Image (cartoon, rainbow, N blue to C red; front, side):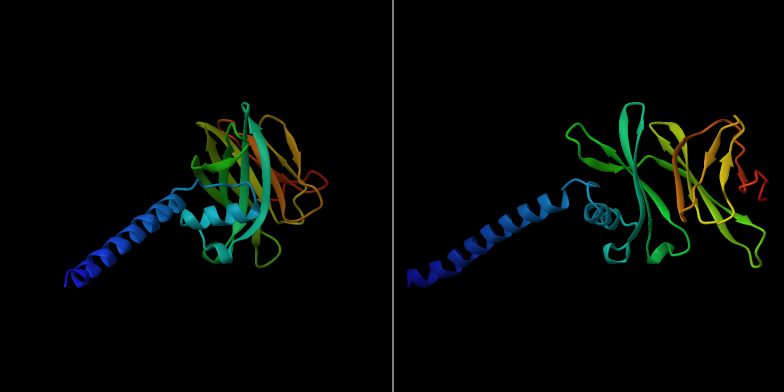
Length: 189
């Protein structure tokens, strides 16, 4: 009789041990760092923070840049939620060389539409992102006519031949005025 009374107690203890081990692994898996070392890790991190589904994420451009001695990785990506324009997310390199998710402040995103051809299409997506409270511009250029971007300080940034083109980690100036020029130096809009 006593043997039968112990059976439910033993089963209960076994299930409790399995549940504790399972919860421990689940918690460790959920609390793993938000990494951006590889394309697969970047897609998984974007999914985990709720900015796109891993299977639907298409990385457009990944580029590293150094800002005040810290290396950042900027990622432009598209997903089902944002098919019409890429999103910008950022990772920061830690002391071990791993790229970890960096919230920062994606302060704004503007699309600049060139009036021709008809109908007009998006030629330049401009992003303003704050890294450690310092603002930087990021540009995603699809317009074939856009050859240079210029700023108030007189700097010219060549876009190059490939489209889409990416100009990243450009300094921000107060009262910035960016102009988009064709190959002959004529303003596009």
